[in-house]
Length: 464
Ligand code: ADP
Image (cartoon, rainbow, N blue to C red; front, side):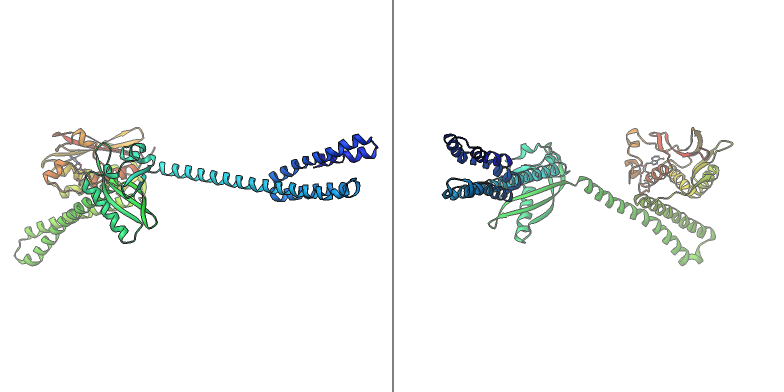
């Protein structure tokens, strides 16, 4: 603005110092031309400060022209000329700033749109669910995200196809269509449905489909579907059902024995010999014991599940724990030979005594269940580095290598034991694993089918 003003008043200075007339005339003509220079600051101000800047700069320019027009100019009638020029100047500045505003606004909106599209794309691509939109009524896939690979396809392979290829058969496809129709008839715009779907390789899997309907002029124009693979959830539900069945059976059978024995003693007591009465009560007591162990195992698992397994660790005598547990199990099975193979001086371990008893009990109970009567069950210990390794061996049915890999998992019962009709809920080894791991130890099995098994677990030595 300053530069313009100086340039503009060059004429006045020349006039004051009395330059010849022709020269003055040239400069006078130039005045009008170099007034155009004022566009530069006005446009600049419009660019930087928008409308307000353009107006302020135009007003300042007018003040500069006014001075010359009213007092110095030899053409006072030309006052209108600079005024009109300033109005044009201001107008151009305002229009320029408006235009710039619009352009910036549009650019900002485009940028925001691009960012939100990118964000949405990244979000949907990072999902475990396949997301796609379908054009209705032909159910043609318009768009699909990267996680469409969940179904085994590249998103591009699906675009332009009707969704029928996602279903294992026509009936499943029609079934979903009917559910959608019913939801729409009921005025719902969102449908959650469980459906069987098919991966590219042909594998059928259970899926949960969430479909959102978009209408145009009252008609369904497109729908967006989110497909979630629920194989794991279904497997868990099935496991839960199996578990409830198994546990209720395991709870019911000892209860039947207990109530039967107690009722017999109560009703037939007078006619029973003392020996028969003792036998019935012994049976009831032993079933009550196994019931209480099963419930104990369940409780431990629920504690682990809820992260509420707190150990009461202290230096404990391994000899005592082993002998007590073996005595307890002997009361359950007098038909096996128990050998406790301990060193003369067994080092003590740093453990929760009751939990260690439970581990041993579960392993000994299995040794009894899965080995023939008269068989030897041996408990041994050996210190290895900072741990004591405790082993429980039997001469029973043994476990194949393939089956060994399946052990220590929830509700895992091997086919043979199930077929042999041996009772069990598939919890004992899982509880052992959780308790041993809580002590910082590990548990494993060495076994050969038909030649017996040895389960080992480690407990930290108390001096370590
Ligand atoms: P269960 O209540 O069925 O005994 P566990 O978790 O204790 O549950 O054991 C899981 C499965 O491991 C058993 O069903 C059985 O098939 C197998 N198993 C466990 N211990 C032995 C063993 N000493 N000998 C052979 N098989 C065993």
